[in-house]
Every structure is written in structure tokens, then in C-alpha cells.
Image (cartoon, rainbow, N blue to C red; front, top):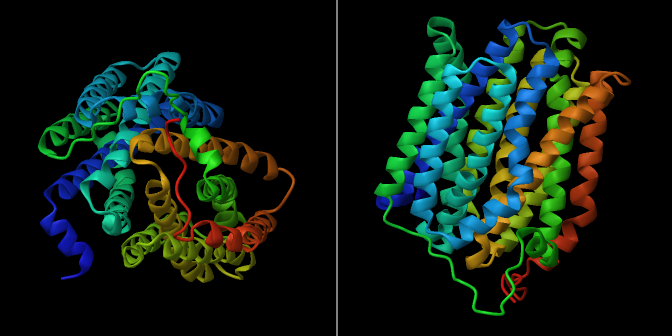
Length: 403
């Protein structure tokens, strides 16, 4: 039995957490498919679909500070229960409402709940496992969510096609009820330290800014999301128009990338110390960049398959090493604030990537954009790799959260 399998087998709280988050993601992604199809079938254009996607991500940016303080102030079980029930109610309302402004407003509320829910789970995980098990636990969670992400488009599409959009939205509501039940099943609670009179509670962005590792990590994360998600916008044009491949090939490549991410998530369990995680981060960032550049020079669509496997694996390792380093560096009583700050940067970068990809697609070819993305991405680990390794040395201590 592998280390990750043994860890999952002997840690009940970890099993519940991994399954709950994967089931919740499955419902969320299926709901996005349903809402996207509803927008399309109602005659809305690409702009309306973009509004839908932004409405779901924007609360993760806007409410990051509030969400982080809630996570660090209140009991983790209470937050999971109340945010889960609230999100279930919003999903049920979405199943009944078809008006576009009302739909977008409800999606914003759903995103606000996710800002709290997601940060709570991430801050709780280091309390469920030991520090040297954190990367493995995150890898298991990421792998389970990757599997859910692979299945979700099919689930959402099939349910919508057969029963309409209400059924997948009600399914999402049911997954939030399941998250609420999972909160009661988990024995581990996270009780944050309350500041004494006169102590100053620092925000998540301030903690990240003052930590020599987290500041660089967050910069790298934002940059890679902008570059990587930017090419997601134009990938369909590379496959269909430049390489003249079928829609089936486009779907196969997406699935192949996800399989690579699954492998990377499980492989990442081998490294647990900060210096090792930083080395994994630097190497995976470089490999991911080379894979993106490889997309741009591929002579035929079949050549993209090894690029997709390699890039997906590097993507999984990059996500895992960044998340593990973030939680290892974050002070125990500030994990919620740091997690919310990281989620805010990731969401803001994703929004920026969609906009940037749409703009650049009008002035450059898909090949040029993929090559530029890979080359620019490769410069980042080369420029800051040595600094990251020095900052992550064992003598360095994470920044204080209160004071």
C-alpha cells in the first residue's frame, strides 16, 4: 500500500474531507455547465457567458478579507454548516429562477459562500494531518477533485439534456447538504486564537506581503494563472482552426491534460519539506512553460498529446506545491486569512486571463500566443528560483499573524 493510500486509510477525517470536497466540486461544475447551456439556449451571447463566469469568481476577490477573518474567528464546523446550507438554498433558488439579472445575482451570492467554504476547508486540512503529511493530503484532495472535474461536464451535460437545467442545479444543492453532513462527521475542529485587547489582527494580504516566501509564491501563482488561463481561451482556435482537428480532438486534449494533473497530484506526495516543495515548484513551473510553448510549435494535433500529459502533470505539481507551501508558511491562527488571500489572487488572475486572452486573440495567432506564454512563463522560475530556495531555508520563520 502506498504512503498516500495508507494515510487515507488510517485518517477518517481526511477521508471525509477528500470525499466532501470532490462531491461539492462535481456539483458546482455540473451546475456551471447547466447555467452556461441555459444562457446559450435563451439566446444570450458569449458576453453573457463571460458575465456568468466572472460573477462566480468575483466574490472570491471582493470578499477575501471578510472571508479570511470569519475563518480565523469562528469554529470551522459552524462555518461549514452555515455556508453549506446557505449555498444549498441559493442553488435551489437558481433552479427556479430563469431571469438573467437574478441568476447573476444568485451566482454572486453563491460565490461569496464559496469564499468562506473553500477557505475553511483549506485552513482545516493542516489540523487534520501532521505537517510532514500535508503535501500528501493535499495531493489526495486535489486528485479527487480532478477526477470530479473530469466527470462533471458529462454529468452536467447529460442531466441538462435529459431533464433540463433544474436537475443539475438541485444536484448541486444536494452536494452542499452533503458538505454540511460532512462537517458533523469530522472530529477535528479548528478553533482560532482570539486576539487580546490591544492586539492588531493583520489581514491575509499583509501576512503574505511580509513573508519572503509567500510574497514570491503569490506573485508566481498570479502570473502563471494569467498566462495559462489566457491560452485556454484560444486553445480551441489552435486545435480547430490552426491544426484543423475535430471537436473530438479538442475534448480528448482536455481530458488528457486532466489525467496529467491527476498523476501530478498523486506524485507530489513524495515531497513534504519546504525546500523540496520549492524545488518541485520551480521545476514544475519550468516544465509547464515548456509544454505551453510546445503547443505553439506542434506540427500536428497528435503532437499535443504528450504536451498535454506533461503540462497537466506539471500543472498538478505546481498547484500542489504552492498550496502546501502556503499552508506550511501560514501561521496557525491566520490560515483562513492567508487562504482567502491566495484564493483572491488566483480568482483575480483568472478574470484577468479571460480578458487578456480575448484581447490578444484579435492581434496574434494562436501559435504566437502559446509560444509567448511559454517563454514568458519560463522567465519567472529562472528569475526568482534562487531567491525562493534561500527564503525557504529552515532558518526562516513565517510572519506573525497578530501583533
